Length: 377
Image (tube, rainbow, N blue to C red; front, side):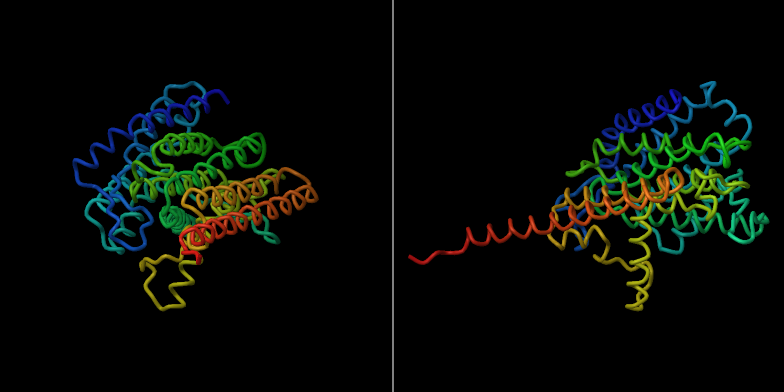
């Protein structure tokens, strides 16, 4: 456990310290997000390319991990760390170009596919699927590889779509990474990782550190945005950790509940981004618009439209992300009765928090309107 805390701290501190340097670089390079688009919720120009500081945190933490005896087996017995390094560097290149110059959707997706091949070709693939009634199904490479690429693309774009408010993507992914790390610890001695070394827990710890370090500068009001450079990298890392950990389970145990349906835990811990993505696809299909069409129908836009402040909307989505992530772990850890009871409590609290914020905002608006309304003598 101590080794994971070290790499977490290295990733967090390096990211936090590197961010002011990236801010200066972004301003010098003209990588500034200007609020000309009506979908933007910020009013002032903000430097982007924040993903570069998270890249620094990732590289520093991986370097330190490679020197630590506790991670020697991961680096010597598997090529996953190398695949992650290649994939992260490729996705960052795609993101930087898109943030600075903009890329056509087809070119951007092609770059994302190329980046996902880094982890996939170096061992991060869906190998087995545990299907009820059929037991364990072994996936051939010609099926496992494209399925893995599709899942990674879904993760990459889900995180990218939710990156619309200060601190939202970093906070949601950080919560997901912490939850997934907890799941990995609970199931580390049985089922999934009993015989196969994996870089998944290490990746989750580093990813959580990167998000925490970046939030120092990215929480509202943000001094810098992560841009596609950071959002796509976060999605790739979290997706890779999930596939590496769950996709090779041949005998899921109680704590390995996700093995029954591959990637259930990673999907649940990213329930908010995936729900937002599903709504966006359905919304654009209904309007017969291209999937790349931008709009203000995302969950964070709706919360603000319903009366939440910028910061409150982010905190509400943090809560729901934590609730789903906790539920993902609880399903395979506690008895069904406790899971149901906890889920009902979390649902009531979540609905109350969301509704209370809307009511409070409307009251403030009415009070302000009454104060400005002229009164008759």
